[in-house]
Image 1 (cartoon, rainbow, N blue to C red):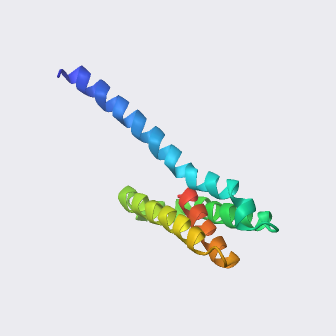
Image 2: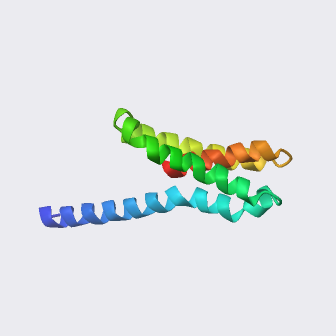
Length: 112
């Protein structure tokens, strides 16, 4: 494989990786917003608040601490928050507040 072919393959790999990771980054947020009616039938606004406010907090505070955390650590934290969001929402079927905590994990991950 020539150097040009290698560079082209690497560029394509990076493009696909950024697209896939960007898609995955937003999917938890979209799923929580889409399921807001199921999570809190009478309080859809609560679900929106618990999904949007943590993301806003991370985005506003990020410039002060992002440089202190490596990309690898942020990716791992994001994966853990996404996993926790789905697990807590699914296991907290009978507790609105537990489900809202799960939605907040989704917001944290989305803001990351």
